[in-house]
Length: 65
Image (cartoon, rainbow, N blue to C red; front, side, top):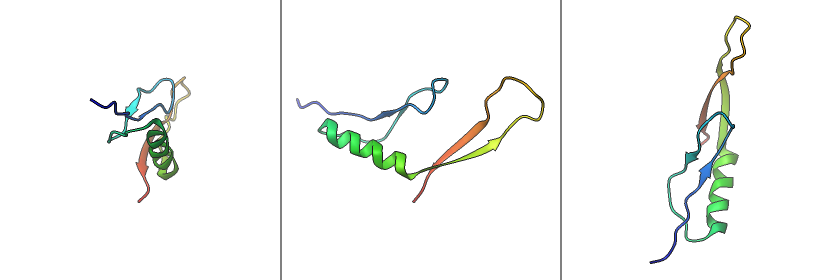
């Protein structure tokens, strides 16, 4: 049985790891897949609370097609 690699992405320490779809035969293929995804990501700040608190902004992420 041949080993396959999956790609896990961590955007920030407070957020969980995100596993990307697909399995790759080599580490190099997995790394290139992660780089392609990270280049296509577009981020937009969805909301920031009005009152002053120690909170993080809510962010939505979508891929560019």
